[in-house]
Image 1 (spheres, rainbow, N blue to C red):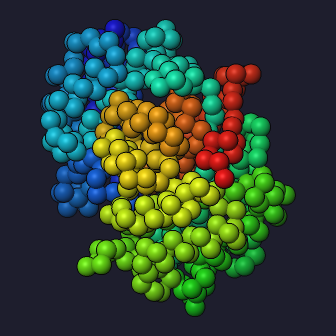
Image 2 (cartoon, rainbow, N blue to C red; image 1 turned 135 degrees about the vertical axis):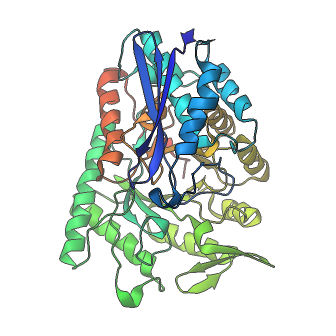
Length: 444
């Protein structure tokens, strides 16, 4: 049993300099805290992030209302009470809000309380103030997980879309170091390739400034901006960086894409169209582009290849290339069991991106992961573009044996905090630590 004795909430800043919510929970001499992240590219079905809308503070992005909701609505409901399980605690939070999308209190008020409780319960059960394994040991076992698998990092080394301002439609170009026996070796390869890419860009006279998630975001060239072949030039740059760093593309290291295609799509009378590389494309034409790319480049995973409303296009995309590549639903599923169930029934995608703040509580997140696991879908634990020093998702990835994590590039301390926590977990697990490499992905 965990008795909540004190609740503290405050407005803090995320990695983009925008306000977010931090919550601290106290029980006896134990204290646990959590900071909620914030996304830039968001799906329509996500839980509501409550912002103040006051233009005189942080350009309207303040979160004092969410902080007040923690202090005035949540704190009185949990202070002095004992809770046996995370699910019981989270059910209380959901009932306090009473809306399907956390619109009353805000997911950014509810989630940090849920996360902090998970940490507090873990500390109490482990009978120590901090343990690298405390949270993972407490969460593991929820659907047969053992909490020993270090995830393969999908490292976002080149940014486009809403994460940059460079005319590239696709939001994330990632390197995926799978051909290694340990997480630490995989991470080292990714870091070395990142620095190799930086040298290549510098040699070409391109900027090495980074985007929201730490990846480079140069304009390839003014005449090629958003034009035919511009995305393939980025893919070629990544292959050059892999080779220059001394690794083998398609054996040691693969590529992955987060297209975030909802951002360059629009509904039409005939369905959904995509404005891509200077032309309007249909779902079928986008599918043909991806087919071409996976035949030419060692692409292992494609996230949000089509828009969140393009369910028929997704069905055809899955039929065409779902046995060749991991097809990840982010905006499509928004970590919501209802949307995931719809996708499973329609034969759409084969993987789900897991973002805690899309759904709003840890329990609901685990429910979505369990549904995916039982249906043969892979799971990828993910950060948001607005992050913090909080490394909860690193613990969650190991605790659930998810096998994959997206937490940005090899720069920006908000991203590296997660990688460093994974290194701690690998060391703490010792000989029990597992790293499945390519085995964490659907068979090709």
